[in-house]
Image (cartoon, rainbow, N blue to C red; front, side):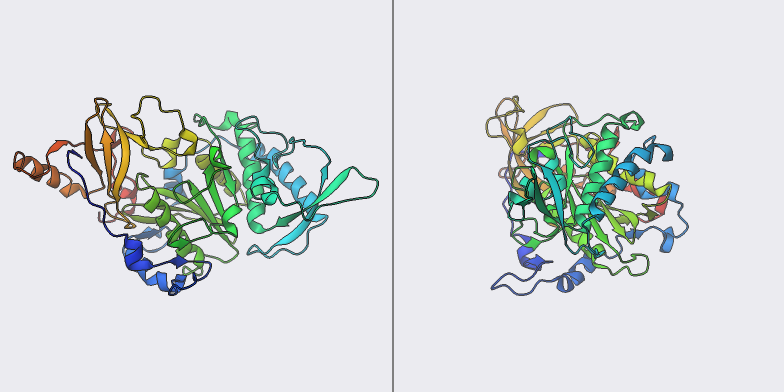
Length: 458
C-alpha cells in the first residue's frame, strides 16, 4: 500500500519482552534471558500455530504429501548416481580416521593433523577438485574463514620433508559442512544433468563458523550448527540479515522428546531471520535428529514440521540431495524470497544502475513500476501475523512516498484501503495513492495455499 505520509518508529519489542535472549550465557550486567526463560514466550507465540506431521490431525499424512515435498523440488537423481558422492565421502572418512580420535555425537572437538603440500595449490576443496564458479570455497570446507582465521600456530614441519602439518578442529558440525559441500559440488558439476531447474548465477555455501561463535546480534546470541550464506559475503561481516537457512543437529530423537533444544532453538533462529528479513515469504530450515532429517517451515501463519527420513538409507539419501539442492542451487525465488522486492547487501554495490542514488533496494508493483527503497522506517518484530514493514520509497520522477507491506487475513485485506479511500481529501489525513496484492506464481500470495491439506482453520 502506497501513501504520501511517514510512519513513526516504535520501541523495539525485543527490549520490551525478551531482553537479551542467549544460548551462550548471560551478558555482564544483564538479567538472565536463557532458553528456559524464553520458552514461555515461544510457547505463547507458537500456541495453536504448530503442525507436526505424523502427530494429531496430521497423523495419517503420507510422506508424498509432506511439506517437504511441497517446498523442496525433486531432482532426477537415482540411487546409482550417488556412487560418486559416496566414494568421495568414504575417501574423506578413511583419510580422517588415520588421526581421528573418539568423536562426541553432539559435536565435541577432536584435533586432526592434516598434511598439506608446501605450495598454494587450491585443487582440493573438499569436493575433489577446484570449484569452477565464484572462486574457491577451500577455507569454508577446511575450517573458518582464512583457514581457522589465519592461525597456523598448530603447524610444524617434519625433518627432511617439504610438507607442513596443520592442526584442524574436527567436530560433528565441520563433518556436516564437508558432507554438504561434497554433495553440493557434485550436484552442481557431475550430476548437473539430473537437476531439472535453472541454477542461480551466484553460489551459496554452508559453514559451521557460527557453531561455536554466535552470530552477532544486539539481543539474541544464537549459534546455528550450520548456516547458509551467499558466497559473495564470504569475507564480509555477517548478521541474521544475511542468513539464508540453517541446520540444527543432535544425536537425540525428536520423535521421542519434542522438548529438545533443537526444536526451541530452531524457532528462535527462524524468528531472528524473519525479524531481520521481514520481506521473506517463509523460512526453511532443517534439523537432523538421530540421523532423521526434518524440514521446519516457518511463515506468518505458523510452523510446519515435516515427516522425517533417514539420511543414510534409501530413498532418504536422495531426499537429502534434494533438500540441499533446493537451498544451494536454484534461483532466489525458490529460496522463499519475495521476487517483487530486493534489499541490497555488500555484493550489490554498483549492480543496480537504474535506482536512485543512496537506494538500499527496490520494490516492484503489479504494473511493473519500480520504486527505489531509500530507508526502512519501521518493521514488525512479531514472529507471526502481519509482518509489517514500512519503507520510504522514491519513483523514477523523484517523488517520495511511504510504502506499507504487510500480511493480512483474507477477510480483512481490503479494510484499510477502503477506509483510506473514504477519508480522501480530509486535511492532515494520509492519502492513499495505490494498493495491490503481492502475487507469487500467478496467484495472490497466501499462507493458506500450503496448509490446505492439513484441514486446519485459517
